[in-house]
Image (cartoon, rainbow, N blue to C red; front, top):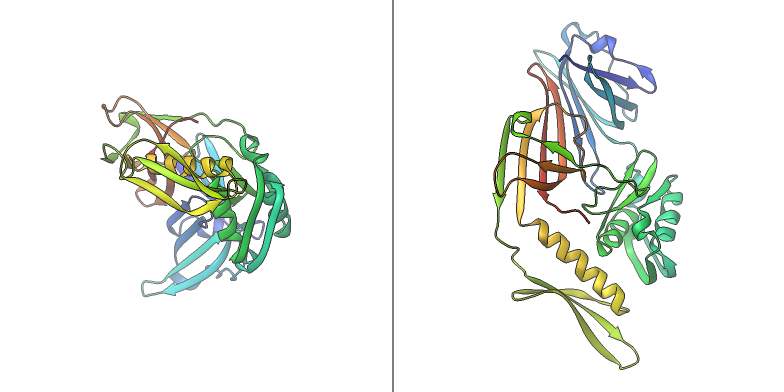
Length: 324
């Protein structure tokens, strides 16, 4: 198949001027509040390519002429580099939904509300819609403090406590259960089956079990004026979470979420394959036909799509995963 791309600058198709000058195009899809990135390297012979302005919006599409192109996101140009001879132009951009306002530190608290309501309010403050997995949207938030903390860090911390991951994408602040294979609307995304013939190289690191076999979270029993433990898992060594939770239910959710994270440490995977736009962070990939220890579900943690003189290829990293 024939690799193809399109680039739009501030809504105008800018593909033609660089069609025969593109040296490399890389799109990196990262998990959570890490910004997605795009990088272009362009042949600047004759200096006939106009330099994009910093702050310009870049929309990138990738794929194949025979099967069509997929939208790879909207980015804001934050760096332009000219180098030579031979002369080249480097353009780098970060996901447009990652607003600078997310980094402003705030102090406030939330009480007697729900996860969905908190995410909805924060999303609205940054001009985004809210898309929260219905399986967790109604989780109660009795009390949660944000003290001299950016919304970026706060939402990440809040999502993590509920076994979820938060990410601004597609004009929305999306919060989904980690490794669930669901969108922010709760729609299931089928795991993508990958077989030996689909890949170029595979490298897996496997461990028998996580370093910690159990997780303990403590909660404050106000009636008995005592601190009570909730333990998820069995055996030693045991990880004890430092925070004291307001009730048993929150403590159990926090311990369960951390135990799930530890469970992913049982295996890490790195794959290179011919370009596949369907590989994105947080999607589940089902390896089939490789061997015992590799076959099964993995959750993509980072995906990189590269188009250059060698064609279009995709590299991704994944962690051992399971359906929830």
